[in-house]
Length: 233
Image 1 (cartoon, helix red, strand yellow):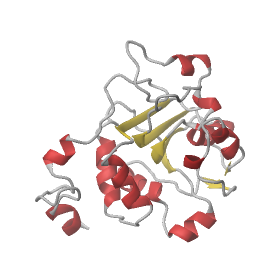
Image 2 (cartoon, helix red, strand yellow; image 1 turned 60 degrees about the horizontal axis):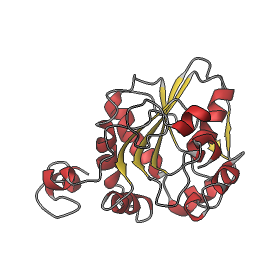
Image 3 (tube, helix red, strand yellow; image 1 turned 180 degrees about the vertical axis):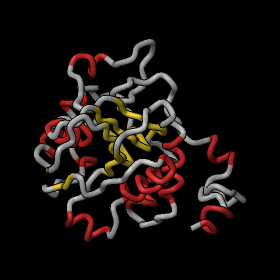
Image 4 (cartoon, one colour; image 1 turned 90 degrees about the horizontal axis):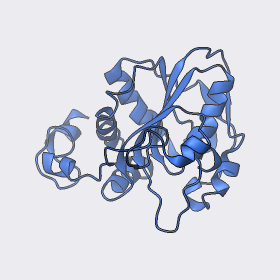
């Protein structure tokens, strides 16, 4: 892996010690500094957006680093759909730059994949990112903590309002999580419903704090309605 990460930039081919050269790293579509602490959407002059104030999500905070735009979307697709596993440490390192403000959790949970999806893909892309972060942060990784028990259609193909219904009852979790702080790692967050549904299950098991550690945050397009996270994806 070191040879893959240490010789050439994945985006431009220039020499690089970290998978991306400095120029490509600087040109990535970073999220603006002022964001809602809960859902990570850009806002001005407040801790929480109006939607999260009106209907707080089940998770506490979202830490995200990039907007869903080129070339961030290409990096995510290369890992997720083309099995370029050497991209996972690069995405993890980018996310780590935003985690200094997050107190160390008790454990890290990669977003679970349904067994059918896991067999089809051969790996859990969120787990590949989470594995690297767990090693760098010295936090236990527990991929078996929760299971995805419903093989739901991809969220990306659904209207925003349908995404909550799509993931309802999708997860199961056993065990006593009383007082635990859990960080959920995923590659992309669109409206937050998948993260919110899993956070609800963790809360029922006693989790005291649930954060989302997300590489790429999709921003609403013109004409999209920003609905509360607990009522969307």
